[in-house]
Image (cartoon, rainbow, N blue to C red; front, side, top):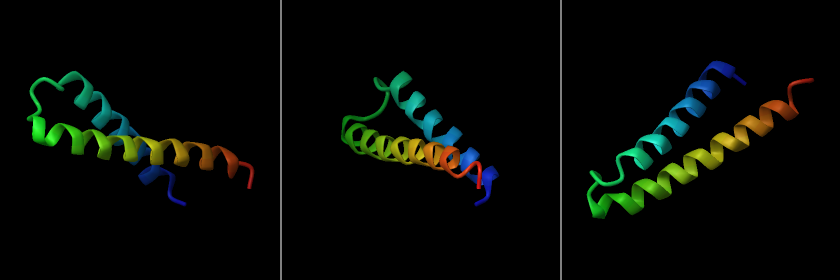
Amino acid sequence: MDSTSTLIFIILAFSLGAVLIWKKDSVPARLRRSMALGAIAFIAFAFFLIVYSFATAGS
């Protein structure tokens, strides 16, 4: 597994979550819920990738 692309995805997922939290007042109400759900899905997958990379680090 390519660690560079995994690291980029993890950084971008957490950055998206941070931007949505900081700019929640300027996001239109119709987009707020769908963007939040998408960010949660990306962050959950990023956590999975972090745990998976730790689990397979010795292999």
